[in-house]
Image 1 (cartoon, helix red, strand yellow):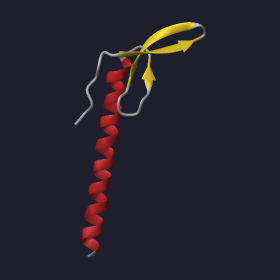
Image 2 (image 1 turned 90 degrees about the horizontal axis):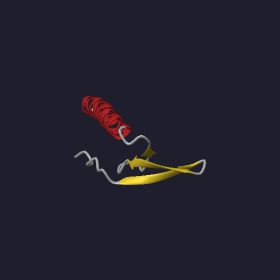
Image 3 (image 1 turned 180 degrees about the horizontal axis):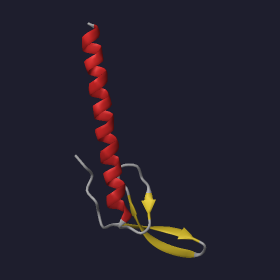
Amino acid sequence: MEPEISNHYHEIQYAKETFHAAMCHRCGAKMFPADLLEAHMDRHELKDMYLQSELKKLQYSMNRMR
């Protein structure tokens, strides 16, 4: 269930300039250029996979303790 990558842009204002940035719907991070959003979402997915593997290890350990 990965959030969709949308083409809806948000604005970042820096030094009297306005940049069109993409916003991550999962954590709210804004990034410029907007092409970085796909890599950002991949990192979210990798983190989820890591947490799932750690959870499985804990579940295995808890089941062995019974």
